[in-house]
Length: 416
Image (cartoon, rainbow, N blue to C red; front, side, top):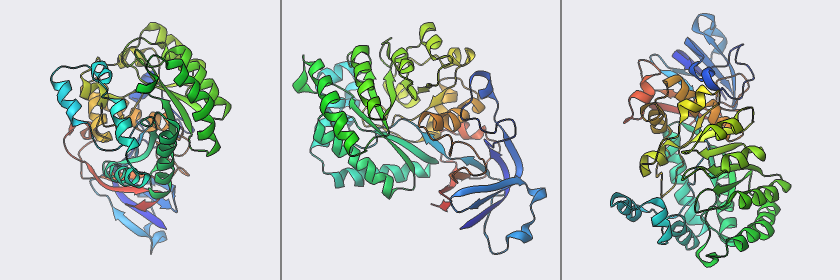
């Protein structure tokens, strides 16, 4: 199929001669956002074939090609959501009430809530039920402009249920037009039956879960919740080494609740990303500098839980890159709306719109390992783009935080 979008007011995040081949942007570079005004975009098959100024378009060459007139509208690369837990059963609004009453995340977890509550609910759900619920969530996030999503396991906490989650994610990859990456997160919490025997649970992850996941080739990445009250640096390193032997690159939950050493462990083992990062100091920044690990902040969780905000300005001033993702999950961020994440980046973290857009497109594509094919408008990249409703400027995207500014989503070259 050939699709020609014409009269585009402005194409955002285009690849230029200066940015060609860049898979991420760092520090002060994030203030730059390459765009092209009064433009066209040609899609052939599932790839971007060409784009350029309307003045250079010879429309008579495209007779019979399906056309979309985007007068007054903009074209963006679809958002890449590099951190979610969107395969789950039910919801946890009762814990939401507990939060309103003043209970902390850790207090709720100690009462059997939090991750352990989701694990119990997931255990009682069938694969078909989980697929049906997850597909509803995936279809919803498409309408907000997301084109790629990473999904973690971690609500199983035993071999059978972790495998069940990852099989669900594998089915979602075949059912959804989204680009999906899967992450094994058996080390999300310590199950109640292993209370006081955390090292035994870590042994089970290493000796039983990881080989089982690898045997069915169910996970692209491996993750550990390395934080206060969860898994130690020693636990984390043992799990990462075991996963890496089977070809699973690390991604780390780190420093959400305290200075945990998780960032340094992630860098040591060449993690694709370290995520959350509410607690980041000079030592953490030093570790991340000159590494290939993408610092990833999850504004939805900080907003929903009322947590301290990650010092993103200090990180950018030091020259680090930054990605942002939704953390879509039932307990601490029950939304996968990346437009809202874009707004929170500006409202809560004081990012410039250009920095925020870089954080949810090119850099978040890097954080889920797909920046070679997604995250920017470039010839031969996958045709995952969205057309906005008529908007005045690209700054309007984070500014108008309460409305959906996306009119048309195109995934793999197909209008959704």
